[in-house]
Image (cartoon, rainbow over all chains, first blue to last red; front, side, top):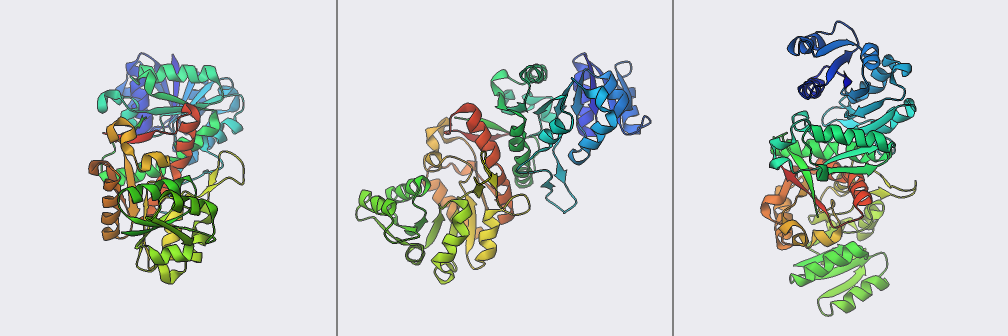
Length: 217
Length: 217
């Protein structure tokens, strides 16, 4: 599949590299066509990756992975242009962490809204699926790194077909079907985004980011 | 030990009954001395439980368990009177869930503050420890109900001695020491309180409240 990865940071690199390993073609999108980190990604995956503006990448991708920092995600998608996004699945793995008021970061939006919802409202013709935003990116693409891949991940979104597609992608990342919990519509993204403050405190207490939660009952 | 349980709902009943089973003496506090649910609790635990106003209960208890609904907790503690609280440990297991804007509830305070912090700021001479607020009350006092008691719980607070004491109480509830994670000072209560929206969505998706999360790494 042709997939756009928005964002050139560690998360975008990790997701993009995994998608290429799985045989997809990836275009990494950023603010400028000449982004150095995007060019390094292309060099690393010669022949299987390309880079360009958010607009170029969105036009290229059948699916868009939003790996930008949460506070800049709406702007990045606006730069992509609505016509390049319409009808497509946006897999939103970003968290709207606001570091401007010091550490630990707060969330914006929060509580009665979420980034996932905000993207869906801003681009009503897309199919937003919130996923993978509750862990360190190394685990997103390699859940077997801990506990024999037996831990939990969540999806939120309004479109059942889009969620089915995202579930398939997660399974291709080695997530076990039984551990992918569909929380419901896109408003449930509030739940997974608001888990981040707990994630940050667990990380702070254990000094180990390679952890996840497993629902037990 | 003499312990005050603030709140006459399911949570207060569950915590109070467990404390009595463990040999403690419990006074259940509420707004009025004649609260019917408190009187039923006393009748159920004849000779080991008493009831009274928040003021009576706070004066009685060496430790106060805050099991009131989160939006009313500060007022309940104010009714108890600062002089009855000073120097004592308040185990705050409440969540500031605001149902006034419809379902699902939002949190108030949230994001840059928490109920745990607000109680600590309002009563600076107490030692507030946030604990047990991340699960259904049946599991709080009976973790072995699921997964052989192997799942996670958290404590937050500024006072190391108070946290040690609360950890002992949790262990007396059959929590395994390895599963009690000290997140740090009372500001970390933001993390556990902000987990509630995810808890609610998991409950909504699975229709089973007898679950918890286990940190795996």
